[in-house]
Length: 325
Image 1 (tube, one colour):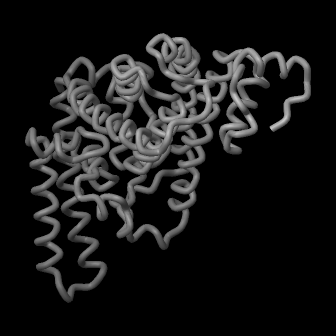
Image 2 (cartoon, rainbow, N blue to C red; image 1 turned 60 degrees about the horizontal axis):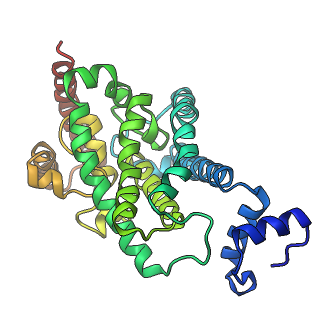
């Protein structure tokens, strides 16, 4: 890559002195060009981080919005009688954007100086190899899942639920956009768990590049949005990785209010016994389907609806108890 502008050349010399930019991959060259073009690493990281978050979040939500409008996919809808309306989608979008600009934007802007204070690489090139990246991302998934498991249960305590977490439980049948539909305080609390893993890892290991953090954020957003999608396809990841949570696992939490507090994995709920109602529901559903062999599609759907209604009624009672009603 050739840098021609004098100002750009000076910035390149300051940031990338001693680096042979021509030896880098195309992606690494574009990375360097971004930091050189902006000229200020803090601004460059802040802009890139926020743009990445918005593009990935809403970009991943679009397919689910489209799927909700196509009747063919309703056969895999976990709560088929609850398809979000355009009004619900819009109301959800407004709350999400409010949180993004009031909570996430300032946090993202402060991330670069915080990251560099613990030794994280940001503008530097070349990037690390894929092996350490894969191990680091796996650690972040495990750390965030445990943090979320604890914090999520805390948010179900009476005071925190009534004043904070209740907003996220507005939809008993969640949809993609609702992944970050939450009180700003909840966005901050759970968002801390997402960023704490990379920060703590770097503070101890002193070996982390922000490109790894970006990959982690992208995968985490995909996981959160898909878990709230409301669909369980035969090709969904939980059918490939048995301990992956997925929409089937998290949808039950919204419907029943209790159980299934983890995000990415099922193991903490299983170990701590916070999935007993969920497993009993799956067992009952399986037995009901087995007993309806040869029945019409309408009869099967009616039986499933009856079971879903019973679970939701129990969830409403549990929610009322959590609010002290």
